[in-house]
Image 1: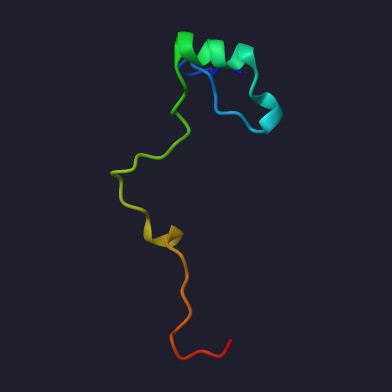
Image 2: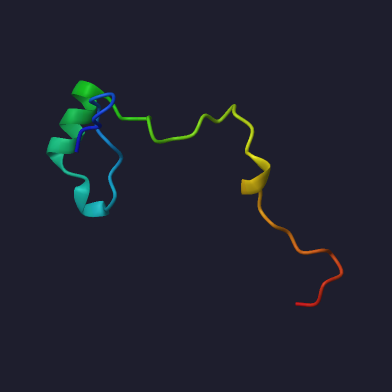
Length: 58
C-alpha cells in the first residue's frame, strides 16, 4: 500500500481498496505522486494522439 520511493500511500487500483485504514494513512503520510507525470512537461511527439485526416471516410 505504501510507495517504496516516497513512503506515502499509493493510489488505489480498485474501489475495494478504499478502506478506513487507507484513509488514515493518507491523512498521516500523504498520497504518493511518484507515478504521475509532471503536468508542466511537454508530451513527447511519439506519444501524441494520432488523428485521421478531415476528409477520410468513417
